[in-house]
Amino acid sequence: MFNDLKNKVAVVTGSSKGIGQSIAERFGQEKMSIVVNYYSDRLGAEKTVELIKAAGGRAVTVHADVNTESGVQSLLKSAIDNFGKLDIWVNNAGIENRVATHEMTLEEWQKVINVNLTGVFLGSKTALDYFVKNNVQGNIINMSSVHEQIPWPGFSHYAASKGGVKLFNETIAMEYADKGIRVNAIGPGAINTPINAEKFADKEQLKDTLEMVPMKRIGDPEDVAAAAAWLASNQSSYVTGITLFIDGGMTLYPSFQYGKG
Ligand code: BGC
Image (cartoon, rainbow, N blue to C red; front, side, top):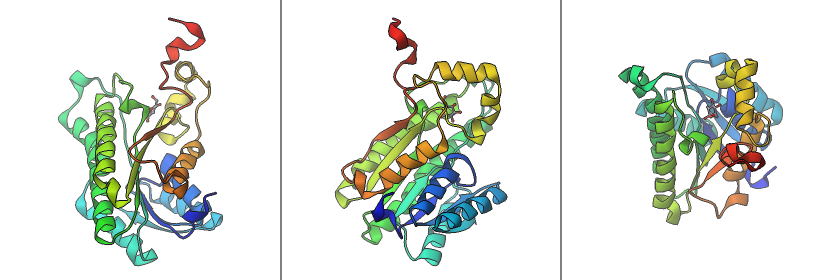
């Protein structure tokens, strides 16, 4: 637990399931107040609120499309109306789908870029504007991926969006560092979440993935949530502009494991 997080107010986008839900629950354990954002899964968002309340935090749900200005504005407004302020903004919402690049439609490309990259821009802009105008030494956490670094055939739109998140994250971290605003990213590897449920239910695909993880296990959303809590807390007060990989070593060139090469 990180004592300074108590009574902090956070927006967590895409927190109706998966990593976002786990971060929101962890923030609840830290006795924080959380705006739980969802796009399509209202029941999931309500479940997140239950988890937060059971853990001792406060929470409200807000339906919003993070790819629109009005959507992200409604998240900020909810934080202020319900909890009086904003301290932490987590740009977590993200999507992916497999499609060969030569068959990818412009719509498919734009959909992934819009949520994963433009959504991160709009969320960050909204939080930064609030932090600057109100003199808040706020904190932004952007959900990236091991694929900000590792190419991923079949997912070129996704990899491009995460590569974009990496440099956007570093750039705004530098741009606002002298105001005491910290901006960091998290790069999850293979994590047990609904986005991966089908893939990891298939024995062959699970085996293939585990071969790429030196620690030989799939990560849990709680592993990512713990990183988010640390990055949000003052325990990481001298850290800005990094991507913290939570990946069991996936970014370490796993094919060299056991001395190959
Ligand atoms: C993706 C997962 C994938 C993992 C490792 C993540 O960014 O969301 O679907 O399993 O990267 O490839």
